[in-house]
Length: 76
Length: 552
Image 1 (cartoon, each protein chain N blue to C red):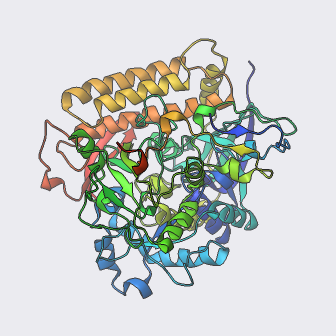
Image 2: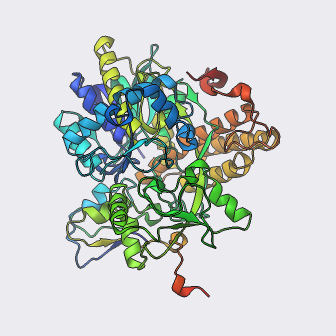
Image 3: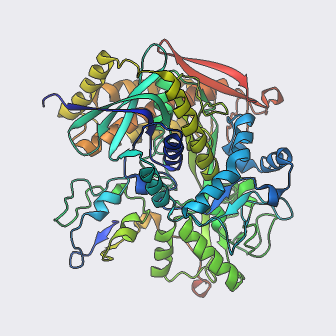
């Protein structure tokens, strides 16, 4: 569930935890890998993704919210 | 657990919430010479409904719209969307907003929020073909950063991660507020000569379209109408809590920005569902949804769905325009998702849906942004909805609150016993070992709202529902647990929602007619006698008092 941190890229700067209005990173500390404590409370605003200085965060959109679209090539 | 540490912060003006309205209020109150503190539950750089950007700014620019502002206002309110959004806001307030909106547009532009497109004031979207244009198309992705920096530069103090959960009163009016640190074990007493609430929309009161999945919402999960609930408890008039509003957008993937899409709403056979556009046109979008927000749901219910937002046939130029606007509307998560899924909007129609109910309760304000309680001001979505009004009325509220503070003399007396009582309530939640948490309580509330004062509202349902919601509130107040500060914040939000839920019931029972989305099978007619009137609710001696008043 969103957000997903690439631990190899993360520089543990704490920016993601600072920017999140919903504080889904609650309990995370600068100097340690961030913890997504409340993933279900993420509503995918993308702030942490955009602010991460090393592009270590991606969002995984949960399946119940998957975008529903039509591909003509798939129609029967 | 011992007693919490209490810190006191004093200022002339306190802004509750660091959204668009709060930041604009802080900037203008500083300009008027007041000392200003902004208390923000998250981080002002990224909080509120304008957190990631906006692309449409309702405003009146005489050189574009002509000199007759009154007829422009009338034209704007022709569309049901603006009419519903602005229900309960006085015409005097709407006029004052329009009169001042261009000044604010120019200010924003000078501060570095690009308000022009290719050097001109470009209006597009939210408009019917062949009719007047109401919304300035702008580039707001960095608006929160620009405004936060401006507020700091002007000398406002921003206190992030503090949730204000109650206003403090003395004999004459509001004299401060109570807050909790959302991360550390401490409380705050804010002493202020005037207080501006600007806490945004009411989320989490009704269940989202995805069962059990709160995040499927276009708003922000941490916006829970705190300002409205606090203002009500402090004795202010709340107007029209029964009036529901519903948004539309990609089904289940709850997003704002419906008017940012440049496409045509089509049924499964490719037929446009509305009369306004037959091919994508960036000037208008498809106004069918604004003419009737439940049309997508109607199609599904009658077996004619699903309905797609179909951008096929869009010009390359308009496609680039739309994709750039998505960024400014704050939809970068959606853009990334489209890329990952290899969805190309030029080829793939996206299903749209009507989202859940947002109550349109507002704090009543006059043209100076004064509420009915002395020293208390309101701006933004909780008194006049959407970004242009939030910016403009924040600006006006800041000026008014600073002027009031100048004349107020000393700060009012803080009611010590009340602070103590609230402190104990918080300690109770933090120290209980067993009981429902915020989420359990919130879900219980949502199902009562949906099933007893949702899409169908009758006297029998609502009188049952009102007693259920009151019982739930009683249980929640005495038994909720919070295992940490994050849960405490959510629990305090949920208590605010319980108060607002009760107001929805009270006013919805009082409105004995069917009007717009307020559907009363026991009163199926729209009563023309009620045109131009609204229900005002305020708390007197601990009890709700309701009154029909003309909104002028």
